[in-house]
Image 1 (cartoon, one colour):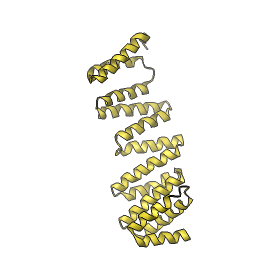
Image 2 (image 1 turned 120 degrees about the vertical axis):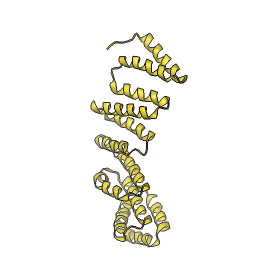
Image 3 (image 1 turned 180 degrees about the vertical axis):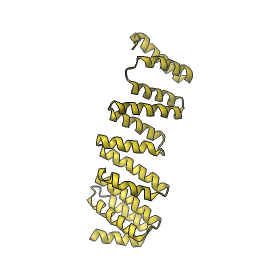
Image 4 (image 1 turned 180 degrees about the horizontal axis):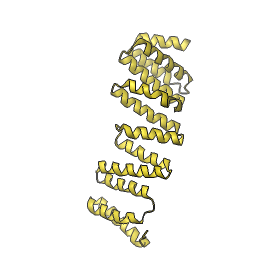
Length: 217
């Protein structure tokens, strides 16, 4: 692989920065494509190209390059870098479910249980916003065992409140209400229980009373 002399290499990157500042997209991309031949890191090359395109507000093409970068990182076992790129993609397109599920798989592989729980909660919130509680419930078997207790309590609280809000069957509500109370009692976050009970009481007094019965055992 051809290497530029270090002084010319540094000047080239300086010129690239100038083109970006001046908004000269084609000149910046042209110079970048010359510089990229000196890279030994294919994944990083894709990632930097994504950054460059994003700086010119070409978000769609930038996202395509970021996906290429993340997949290239995965191919060589650099899962932390791949997760970081997909986190960036998720920030750019929070409604894109695909990125969230890829992150779940990466966090599971990396044993990042807290981040996995955070991402799963975001997926749950997205589906609940779309009135798709059944999709959330269908995912519980797969991901619940991987999630920290505090996050599990929070997710079950969201589901239970949604079921109550949409007046689902009493049997289904009470099943989730019982599980939610159990998780809240095991959670180390003492504020979760009163927050849940306050929201539940505002939605339905009868289910609130049932929750108190579950708490008393």
